[in-house]
Length: 451
Image 1 (cartoon, rainbow, N blue to C red):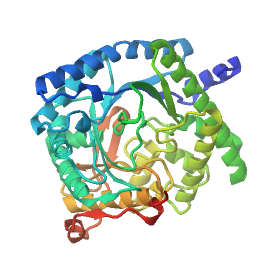
Image 2 (cartoon, rainbow, N blue to C red):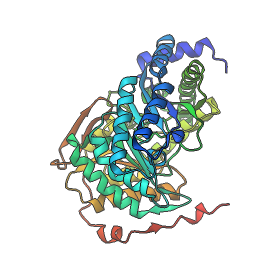
Image 3 (cartoon, one colour):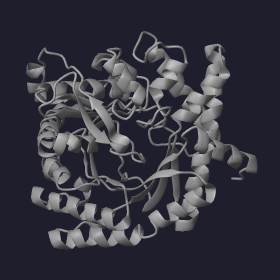
Image 4 (spheres, rainbow, N blue to C red):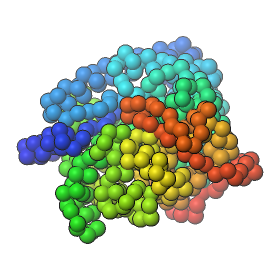
């Protein structure tokens, strides 16, 4: 695919002035051929394959970044869901696998490694259950490992037993890691996608090739700048402005991804064109919504504005690349978005409003901190609500919730870096315990029966 030099010059301007970066170049690696009944042999196979496959990943990404003058924030790996690779092994072995993965990531210079997870939307094997039970210890004993568990799909419905289990695991993880930071690296999905390059949900799906390069772009600052320059145009014209901007950003992401792919001799997968905010000023999805005309993100009209933004971003990306995948849209992580933090502190956004917004954006309730004494059943109810939105609307939804020990509404948890500052949000004081205790599986919606 040819690239006009003018595109490259314009892209460099966007990186220098408007906070544009490539959020991640993620190398996906299949570990399906590493399975072995002996734990020692299993660990050795995993380590050998990752170290050999990813030995040039960081160096290549940094070289391409330097040559194009485009910042690449993170170099990441994703692997086959470990519950599949190590099915049948004990909880203790899963913890050792997490430590091995973490050591590999450290030695390779990898920022995060995703794939310590399981797919349990319809039921759990013994290996799935053992992996899930190991998550608190695994995240407490590692720095770079991220975990995801898929508990629902449009085809299977919602595995409420898995929902209840994950609520307990989230609480255990919170109390085993400082300021509950382990929960920042743990996400519960409905309709998880197999080519997501973003953390904490990245994993290398079973239908993916042996290895693949997936790129996650960013760009809220670029979109914000374009909206401000557009002035007082109507919403149809504004959607076109956003679409054209997303086109340019996606072209840049594919250019970088294909160059890395070419140099590593690894197949190029997809560009995930999600607008991924950071705590930096001017790099906020909430600020974009307010630039559209909302006094504060969360006021009436927010969901409509977010829907328009999400749709325009997707349309622009699809024009720019035939290989768009992952999640692709707008992320609304509370702690990672300076504008979102301000909206929570001003009382403009509640969990209920965030839930409504997730029906029209990329993922779900993301980086939401709640009081540490929030009951497991309430967390399970929050997960189930998001899963219901996902499976009914044929989209991915997720929950990355952080019950921060000894913190109450009005306080916050400080994580720094991309994880930002998480204000503690209020949860309903009414109980969903009797509903959650029923267990079982909520059947798939009728719309899922479409063969």
